[in-house]
Figure 1 (tube, rainbow, N blue to C red):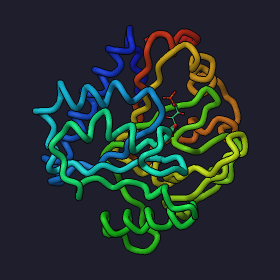
Figure 2: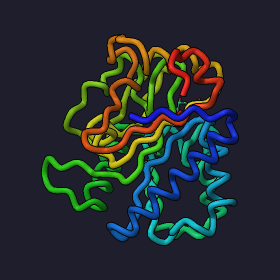
Figure 3: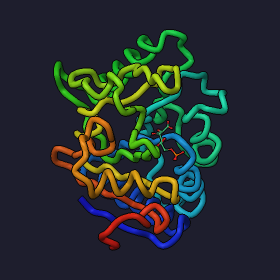
Length: 246
Ligand code: 6PG
């Protein structure tokens, strides 16, 4: 596990953009394509803007395939939609073909059916046999102040899912279902990179990275790639409670 503390949020996003470019370059060179699962929330917005501007000419967009780590149970036009956020900040500004973008069909009122549909699209794209799990080149994740990541929230049933690839996870405190990749998929990635910014995450980051707390209560602790790299890109504000300052 690598923890990099960047002085400012801007430096965090620049480092994240470099990670994406590095992963994309390596994946295309080795396998002819780059598969990435995007996070939601607000932290990634600045990264997506950077990828659409500064990194625009260096990323192999035609060989890049976009997926999502999770999605709110809303239509893609909804202000809460993770897809909408990525579309507005990046996808609408880059030369990526519609066929390279695999949106979670969260407009389906039946969240379980939406999850099943997305799971089938993963099985088809990655040409998975029974029991196989997709291996993403890069999964970008955020972390909530409660320690959740993707839409795996503390105490939610989704934390126990060991065979499905995508589920509709009921989040009691939000009184809604969220669509999310499951831990087997997140931990199968070649590289998982967390992006954590801001003082509101400092206490939880210390708990997740430094304390021997029960992982079930802090789902970000459950992200331990089987064979892949785990990189934490955090800014100084988020790292302010850590004892080991990198
Ligand atoms: C979502 C995200 C979620 C997010 C964290 C951090 O759908 O909201 O996938 O897991 O990464 O909640 O969100 P912020 O970046 O907004 O702090």
